[in-house]
Image 1 (tube, rainbow, N blue to C red):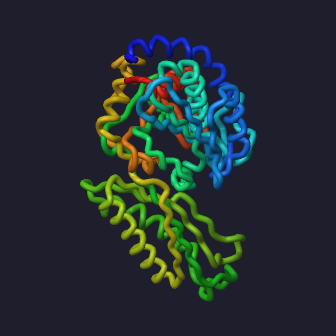
Image 2 (spheres, one colour; image 1 turned 30 degrees about the horizontal axis):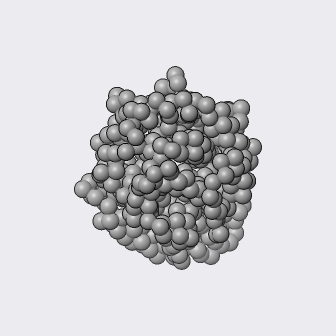
Image 3 (tube, rainbow, N blue to C red; image 1 turned 30 degrees about the vertical axis):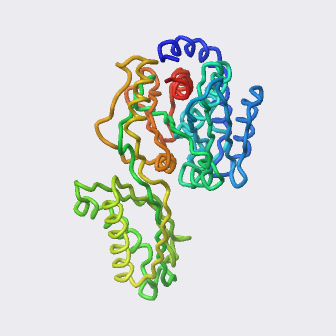
Length: 394
């Protein structure tokens, strides 16, 4: 059906289920879980979907959920994805429904993504006669660096080859109710690294009998961060950040081990290779100078996110019809954020879209991954409508 007709029907439907969406979002926000295994989150989502009696598959190796909605007529198979996992952050947002789990918070809005996609399932079932084709609703754990997307692909998520794939990601720094994306490269690749320095520990009063592992670690942080400003080619941009450093046990003990973790972001393969080479070279040199041993390990968190040009045009046109062209934006350049939805977009044409959730009246909202992050829940109805429309529009 035309997007204009669909817009009228979706407006009423999403208003009806707004309490369900907000309720699920707050339930998940109070009880966040990390990584690939999210039993309480999975159970809450399944409860919200149970009245729909849809064909449902749960993961064998992770807490994933895949739900199928078949339309009344033939048409494309559209994959819609939401992520479910939280971050290892102590929440300080001040929300009445703030996390009750120490060291875990939905600071990236995955609770909102999940609630919106669950709401879209209700809309799609309500208007199943208007759906041409099939909607595959994917609730994914482990997006925050735990390989959740790859785990689901390995379990057969893409074996039936969907025709197109879409995901929404809320943004508390984008005006509430607005949508933004771009064709082609949208987000960077993301690699994690762990550097472990070792040496002789000992008494703080006899440093000459020890190796300065902590000194090596601090020199490594400073050198890596400084070298990026000179070594990064503007034509192949990349970033390096050391984000944790753990060493020592007491003020009068020279540490024998230091562990640093961080990440590399790059917008192309050349930048990615140069960043990794710099880390290897600098780490080896500093370890040698300080007489320390070095162990370096890598982990790929996400490939670059590349939006299919045709599907991006379709998605932004659909958003414009729903919300108005003045609320839909084509971004000028890619960002250094990363998303493991890129694994799906490498195999299926589709697009990742940003949904604005900036709290009203807030001039400087806390960004994603901040312990202060808050979002405007009124924007979630728009996300529900957009998820559903991407599967239903022609």
